[in-house]
Image (tube, rainbow, N blue to C red; front, top):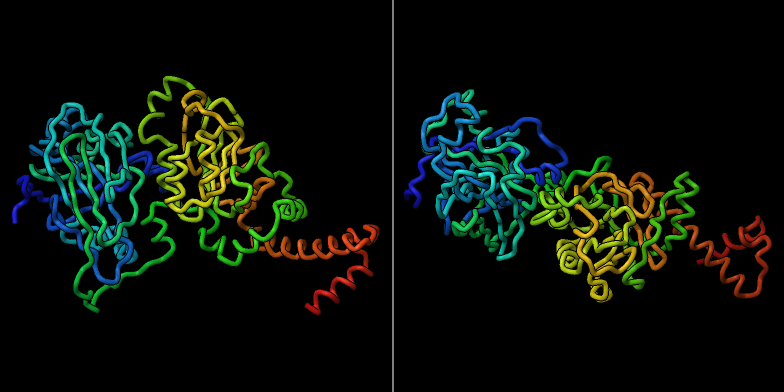
Length: 473
């Protein structure tokens, strides 16, 4: 069956990383573009299902802009490049990460399957493609939004670069990369990509009805592939799953931040308590992994350029992974809000387990009923653009006078929040539980009328009494 737009590409070339937001999400920014090829048989269109093979679980979408070549381009300059374009269209670069382990960078099995490159529903012609807006929706919810002026490598450079070493023929297609927000979708999900007002490219994910034949490579899932598929930034030092497990989370929730603080001081970590923040829900405990977001002082021209639309604040919320805590560095400035209830709710729905800002909190009354721990400096009704520019994420930040690294472990209670280096979390949790057990013993003896002399801390005699009681339990 022919493509409704008459597309007949001899080759489909896709860019690996090209949007700044995606580069930040991946934790690396390329100096030059890199590419991979998708077979022409992967071409599809709006309304056709996208099939997830049996045994796979990591199918991800990537909303992109397709550049459709109109005239032959060979060794053209960037200034000449756009003159060889027939138009632009919405595209979706689907892939199953379950096959990435065997593709060695080619993405052939992961992204080259039949129907994995839908394009349409219309071709847009423009003299200035740098102003094109791309949006992606999953089941009607906006999950990606970016302007082409966010591209690391513009359309003109991509065409000129490729044409240095190969000939781009009429009908060839270049996929210009995806912004932040790409993630895993399941059978039954509907993904729509929209380029300006040309209509939505709509594709439903379906499960393959038959089994995958046993010969050849089989699907494989690892923690690293999951992190890549879900869009999380790799945390230097350890994967999240290796830092916190259910037992560690339970142990940290069972002890006070005061106890953890004393254990950190014993290990030479004195600066660990985030100062000047208070809980919106003192009844909730918080344990999670830090995802950082940095605000810089307002400069109106910079805010006009990067502060609107899908800015760093919104992108970070859309990048949050289950078990993470959003840590906002607002320089301790209380002159504006830094987060409101809608974005906080979105973070919660994505699996966030907490929010911390040393700045202002908008819609603060709503947070008292939000089922997520939230810590903030002050309540403030003004939007962030009054004092801040949302700049970047997943970098070391200062929050409440404490250095917070992406991947740090954060524990919060009614008193406040402490920051634990991942390498220390297991031993700190273990010794904190032990310390609180001893302190409960001391508290009970004091309640019975005992003097603190020799009891707090315990001398040899009291230590023996404690150990005898503990062994009898």
